[in-house]
Length: 209
Image (cartoon, rainbow, N blue to C red):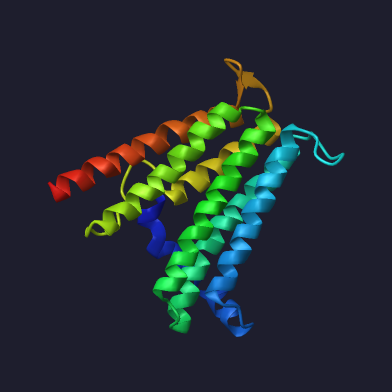
């Protein structure tokens, strides 16, 4: 959860972007939808990086393009909340939309990584870990606790790691013990996803016991 601790710093850096978005008439919900579109584009880039799609690819340099889009998705995820607070439009409906869009974004990004490497079993383990992490965070709130954000790796950390590793994969497409950098990324996402979910479950159970 390293990057979540830096959220106040990131939000201060967002101030000029929030001001610009507000001036051109963007809405928080609109930014959330654009963020999902960016995530879907990243997934497409990751797929093309490893496998030909519609006559394009494979080309490892698409991993670099996907990395840029993943970082942009994370930036937009911060922007929509800050914009809602600036406009005074933050609401439960907006919060719900933001979380649903984020989950779909997480899903398509991991699916793109799996499709590009052909490692569908690892992709399944990774995406279930990511989704269970988020589920345990909100389920704690459903039973009367505060929403749980703690754990080994949060969404901000996960996006940052995904962006860095896939950027590395663009220039170092080799394998280590039979897996590319992206394959090892899927192993990491699967492992820490389920560990984080179990950690959140343990703390939630301890709080309600």
